[in-house]
Length: 297
Ligand SMILES: Nc1ncnc2c1ncn2[C@@H]1O[C@H](COP(=O)(O)OP(=O)(O)O)[C@@H](O)[C@H]1O
Ligand SMILES: [Mg+2]
Image (tube, rainbow, N blue to C red):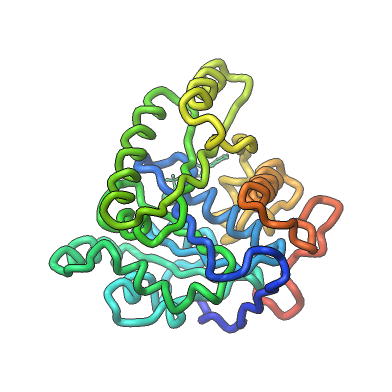
């Protein structure tokens, strides 16, 4: 079941990051590197710390949607991209009061084809988002594993790009290709697009290969590499099958805690004062859904 957004997100304007929302595209053309896991858990960590957050699933596989238990939505991102509905009409409420989700289904594959004849084909998402920018502090876009039209829409709409990376052979070559795409997007449609950061995912500091690739990546990308690395953690892979982000599935798990740390680092890097309400930690579990909030969507 995927109920419509019933909560009106109330933004606290006093926390340093005033709307319009910071739009962050989670991009890597390689599949299975942790884009969806990062988008879901980072969005949840920020929402749990009182930041009004929207997560847009822009992958026809719909993994971010199913990660919130949203399996057959009646409305979805496709409707907004094709101009049939506004984003407000397709936003669904999650179990976290400050987190809304715009889901995707396999139907979104059709958008790649249907958008082609349109003149503003790579700007559809950007235009559709404008009326809602004041409603959130953060908007995350979970991208498909390609650099096609859907990802281009995300890059045109975004203020910055967050790149999850697995420390394996060829990872750096893939990143070089992505950086070229980002440069082209800067040239043609979005001159202010920033690199928010590169995040090591499923990181195993004991593995020689992980360490070597991480070192090489630091050499190339310097300060763009986030200090917080996400370890491999079974709770992170189990949580989606329960339709929950890790912090609602097992708050104490190293995976949930790593994404909370990542959220803090993102706030610090954006020079945002810390939220008055602390992000959840095992000793601060007051952030489970409030009474009356449905347990998942
Ligand atoms: N840190 C992690 N620890 C364990 N499993 C992970 C971790 N990050 C992602 N996974 C799992 O790896 C798979 C691919 O991750 P996903 O986020 O879907 O990648 P992408 O969106 O880039 O395709 C999923 O099954 C996910 O549950
Ligand atoms: Mg994905």
